[in-house]
Image 1 (tube, rainbow, N blue to C red):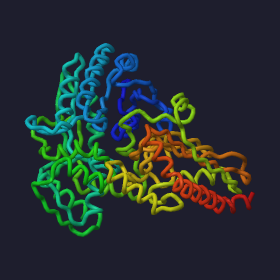
Image 2 (image 1 turned 180 degrees about the vertical axis):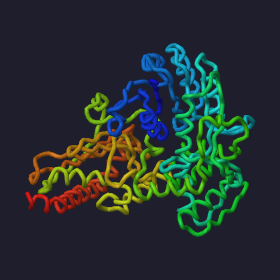
Image 3 (image 1 turned 90 degrees about the vertical axis):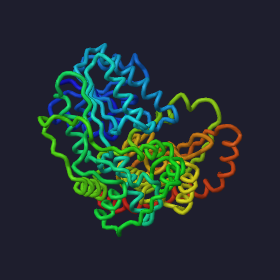
Image 4 (image 1 turned 45 degrees about the horizontal axis):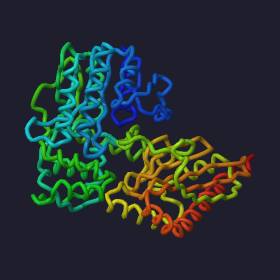
Length: 485
């Protein structure tokens, strides 16, 4: 079949595409920014079409010639109006699917009983109903907590359990849930292509039903940690809980809030399940956790919850948005005896556990202040300690541009009174190269300008030390290579 996949740059979609290719299907990836798929190993095996679920015209053209489609997008991180965005997108997609005569839409939603659902889960259900109201048959799979390396549920679980030996939690800690391994979610999604005629809603879960308290204790056991002390109290509001999670985990409070709000809803399989003919054997929770943790430790995380951005990428060098207005620039140019590759490796390993080469205490303090202010802080870390892919996250940055042995540009996602970028580029040949490190800041209003001038002395000292340290590490790394040459 010729299958369209929305959300191919996200956590589920990025893992589903290679599975569909293995099954022999022809895959068409629908993305807002085709360049985001350039680094994926399967990029040459798929067709990529630009489309936005909020733009009906682009959707109808992008689905042309397709037999079926996966709908794997939502707007949870897009602000308080995510429910309206979800509905608009679902209406647009249902109309485009009908116009192209698709045989089936497969949608991954959320589990939960219909009454008193959180806004997040309510929106998931409403999207399924909106898609099914169209003329195209819909198979909706409803899942609860997805356990996999890099999944948002697993990352929140991992950070809370590892960072806090003692936890004071709201009463949702006793809510029952039925987690499912990511491998099983993917198996169900692939099998759904063969679903029988008509609209169907299936609930999918693993073999274990546990409370969130039990799930955290099980993770502690798998990770070799002491048993956690978890005290449930009825006084912590979703707003306060999400801010606390935003401080302790990599989740932005804006993303954590709808997740925390949904933890009050029991998410256990109670209704129709997929047919036995789909032949999916689910994974026990302990085994799923062990696999996810092993992949994290071995740095084999294929996709991560941060892969999908909640808003279009910020403009970067070369875009027309750079013209006009005020743009402050801090540029450092350092001569180097290193190879271009050594310089590239030096600045692309920045962030995460490796830190920032100089004044790491200042970067940690900046991350802490950002977390307190409701930003993402440094806890997102890196997907891999050395590899860098376009549009992935590094701490409170997102990769805006990367060219092998040439350039790395990061756009800032910390709380700032303006837009900021940090860029490294290489000029010259091996042994006679030059590192150019440039910080750009486009201020918003008077406060943005005051911020730049207030921080200028600190930035100059920190950026100068960082650039020189990068060159020093690159020179040491390439010395044996140049000697052999």
